[in-house]
Length: 182
Image (cartoon, rainbow, N blue to C red; front, side):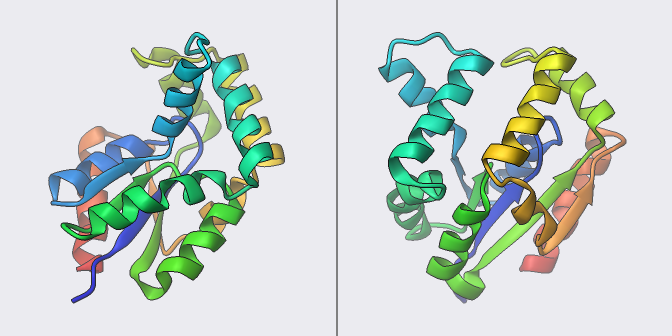
């Protein structure tokens, strides 16, 4: 049985990290693309803020192309695959999707997590870390759709989880996807 690489995609506040946590609880090793942004923001001596994170995300894509995060994460993913299946928290661009699909082939799967903008923006305004105002959340949505090509991977996902109710329902849905993948 070959190992699997599963990428969890969705807009900010949809529940990607919660779904990735369920995969992790089921033995997957988690690779979070956002860690690259966080490290680069710190390396540049900037404060962690939506504005600085967006600046760094777009700068990395200028430097490494639109598949930047996938390219920069391949060594870590390959290393983790030696020991376990991998869940990627936060694949962003169509180009990243294409690179990973080409690289991992039939072992690569995408799980989209969907929640309405209203639900997501409420969640983002209430989360303890990296909270966003509704205006910041709407601005981030636009930037990610227009500048990062985030919609493609969501549209072609192998599985879609609708996250409009409880955390327990979300976890149950994620466990169902894991069962199907195994």
